[in-house]
Image 1: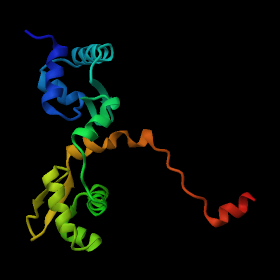
Image 2: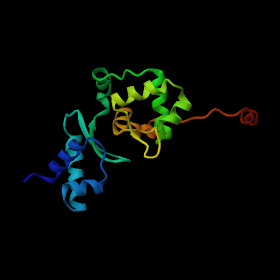
Image 3: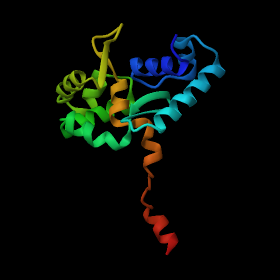
Image 4: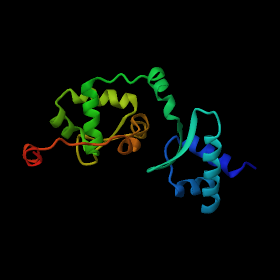
Length: 172
């Protein structure tokens, strides 16, 4: 029988997305303490290997992912060829999801139809027909989160808002 850490490694690899501890317990069929020990063992094992992969805990759960130092290689091998319009459309879908395709076209114009098709083909967006309407519901996919590393953005960015004119005057 396989070590629990090896089984959890296989689960993380096969799912290809962050998993909560509860999900790992369900798939591995083990106790919480055993899973936590196995995750620590697995994380330590990857931390001490010369590997392109790592096991990390994110706000969304535990995942097996490519180390940050290899992100440039991802861009080279799997370049994202999205135009500015498609990126803006994707941003609207990400911020307002779920959003209907009709609402999206009202916000972004008729070019959004082509953008949605492109985003569907790339796997960044999924759509499903409304049960009571003629439009589609649009949402971003796990591939969007993985590709753009959205879970890591709050730690990487410091948002600084410019001071209003009143605040500038008060400082002087």
